[in-house]
Length: 356
Image (cartoon, rainbow, N blue to C red; front, side):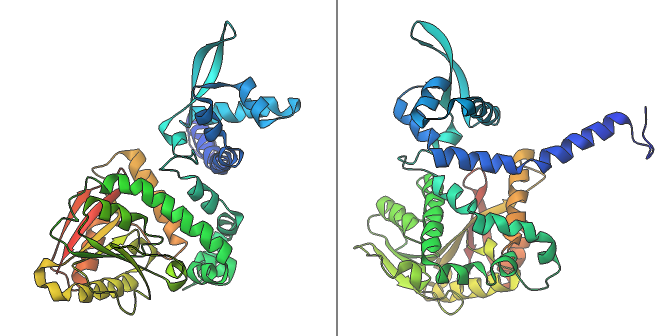
């Protein structure tokens, strides 16, 4: 059987399934927001073992009429890896129950590594609603998506909205706490370095991890003045406000963690040149450490590449981008650096050391 356009019916049906999968994909993020808002990962964690649906809805005080809807959402989330459906014995009966998985453990708010603030920030309608204006944005030559939706770029918006700025900073800190799991075993920051500047270091989460590993290391957290103005330093960690396009404090090494993907090439070159100036007193011993995505479609798993490409679409909203190795190399050479080395860090992120 074939359709009027020459496609086999089986191809048409497969295409329909793909369209519908993307059409309703927003329910993935909304169901994620749902479990964070209701604190379901916390409930299961505090329960101490897998929880039955009856116990879960009792704790949540769900109306009888909506219990079936909770079951549907939990079944879908389990299908996608956020919960595991197991069998337990309770009240002398075998019952179905929900257990946490590595993904939902990352949403337990009492956990050291919790991504719930990231979920709350990204899925706030202020940001997520902007994506309804992709059509309008694509015709605007120089504007970011947030320029179109909010009337200003994201950084100006954060400066003018302190409450949302706090949400954003906590989201970035939560992401850093997970990333720092990879940094704990990373040797790019070594005992040979005396001082590191963490550009865009937020509230200092990464700086504190580095100083715990190397007690003699001095770490300068460099960020927008409104981010660091109320933060207190210590013997090892200090906070400096400023503009990375103007100057960066002097140090042995400069750390750019998920910074360059926010910017177009010409802006990245300006930032890297300021980094080069910051390490100039150390001659060839100084270096810039970049933690970011490196797209490598030919060598990585299809699912990993898919996530990286999704992140690339996300960064387009800032007029930024995720890059492959050749695009990174071009940036480094045009910024005046001579060499670089790329090493894996996490499933999505790589560590790039750039040498003057």
